[in-house]
Amino acid sequence: MEIAHAYNSSYADLARGVKDRVVLITGAASGIGRLATLEYLKLGAKVAAGDINHDTLKTLASECEATGFAGNLFTCTVNVTKYDELYDLFFKTQEKFGRIDVVCANAGINPGGDFMSSKVPANVRPDMKVIDVNFVGVLYTSHLAVRFFRENTTAKASEKCLILTGSMASFQAMPSVGMPYSASKAAVLSLSQSLAIQGVAEGFRCNCINPWFADTNILDKAARLVLKGIPLAPIHAITQAFILATATEATDQAWVIDEHGLWELPNPSIKSKVVDQFMSRFVIGLKLKKALQRDAYKRYLSIAAIAAGAVAVVWKLFN
Ligand SMILES: NC(=O)c1ccc[n+]([C@@H]2O[C@H](COP(=O)([O-])OP(=O)(O)OC[C@H]3O[C@@H](n4cnc5c(N)ncnc54)[C@H](O)[C@@H]3O)[C@@H](O)[C@H]2O)c1
Image (cartoon, rainbow, N blue to C red; front, side):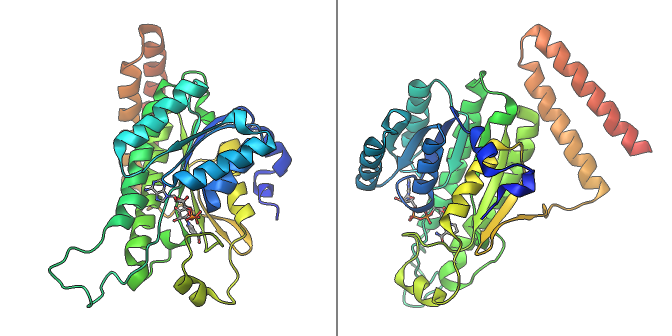
């Protein structure tokens, strides 16, 4: 499956762009995260792999020891819903590898259980763990990514990249068991769009990878039963989407990976003049705020560039 053709280059060409990047990935010990970790390592990246499951993380480390990748791998047990633990992962990664270029907020769960079940008394608070891991965890990871990108003065803006793992459920809402899961993944997609805009002002990229069901540990018996006979997304195509997001200059992309491979979906944002005007001003404001924090020489250069951009926006408004 050739997913790179959309970017007019071969996968081998793209893969070269990954060498020596410092990649932090959550949910790295199983399924999509595990394969992405191995692919990044194979292509010469340095990887900080975080996961809540200490044992599977240890297995991943031993596997890398055997294949000779261990020198470029740092593993750390982390629960993404615990901000302090996540901060520790970012801090130690920067300490070990000198900087953080790419962050993959990938950890996710789908614990099942009917969200609206009548078996649970109505006065019992429903379980919100899926929102905590799939959304709050991704928010924490994105927050820390941006904070640590700001400290990375070595990488170019195009080399700093956030990749959020959404799902086909980001677009296709599900009832019952899937309700909080699809809501969490729609929120992840929305967050990726906010971050992509923030990235224009701050100098980083953000994309959202949205797989159809794939054969990993997240699929329980019930899901496998419902999916019987329906083709799944090949995991290697999902893994390649991480490499594509890392090595190209793509930003604000919502890629779907289904049984056929990777699809680029048009950004669903509203195309209207008032929204465009509001967003342009918003981004100019963010750029200005960042420019004012720079030292004198760079500050004046940045302000001049922003002023030129603002003039272009006003020109567009009256023409
Ligand atoms: N496999 C699919 O069908 C599918 C489809 C669409 C999206 N996704 C998404 O892909 C991502 C990866 O899932 P997967 O399919 O590889 O499943 P998986 O269960 O194989 O891997 C998920 C990993 O996340 C880790 N994890 C869970 N909770 C965590 C926490 N609180 N802190 C840190 N790590 C935690 C798990 O220990 C596990 O190693 C998830 O965000 C999932 O929602 C999966």
